Length: 161
Image (cartoon, rainbow, N blue to C red; front, side, top):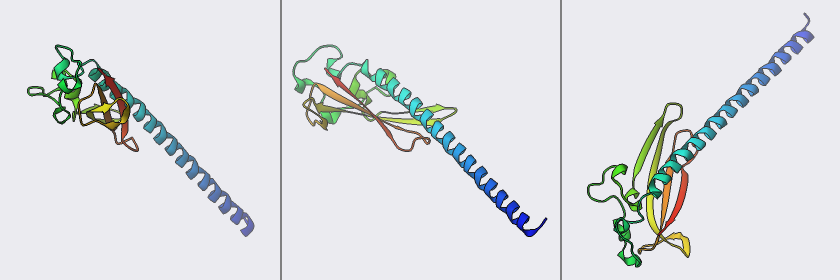
């Protein structure tokens, strides 16, 4: 084999090596993207399940047993959260009991999903603004994290009385 053939052989091996490396990188990126998408879809299902659980509760502690027509009668914004004796979500009887509630779901394939719930009053005319007085509209925010997710995913639900 002469030196020209050796150079061509080395060049061919180098090109083949670069192609193989690019194929493996591409395959790894594809699998990472699929794994991330699976985490997003699974996390959305977990968060939606929690939203559904919250929505079936009474609007406010004061509305569990009777109705109110004056918003000032509802729980003060500084007091939103679980009531005395309510330690787990199965004991919660109204929406704002979930304020500052945290939950973790562990799945074999995707690991730990952490959820944090915030509940607060909003003004129905300006739903993007937190209200510091009682209104007949509350917003539920759920923050979802998982090691496979690039960032925290936020879910929002507005509940009106």
